[in-house]
Length: 137
Image (tube, rainbow, N blue to C red; front, top):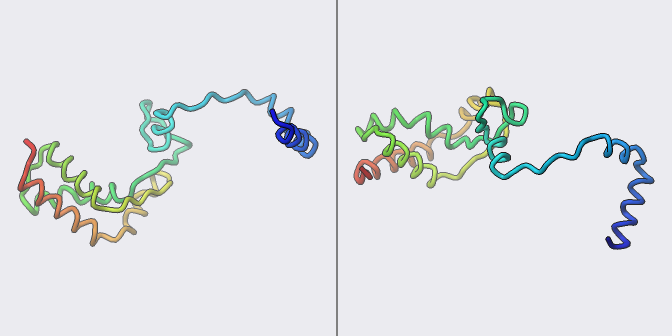
């Protein structure tokens, strides 16, 4: 260790004497694997429990696209298989700017309703027409 880092540790101990005893009392946490962190942040838990205290990261654009997907597919008489539906969602989301928020699951719908639909629906229609013209099955 360098002299400056030792000085910083000594200074911190003098300013915060109780922190050293608390540090020893708390067990050292193991580093979280990238997959585990991703699961916790994006709400993908195997046990079904709420990640990070019920808070997770949500792409509002993805939620809006999924909500309007079936109605748009029906309007344009496009194939409803899982492959085509997935292709439509992927094409649409690639055209849109993502809008990620951190919120509780019960607040997602309220935030989704605030997203302007014009660009989302235009991209969704464009994707439906593209997939309908060139299905990958």
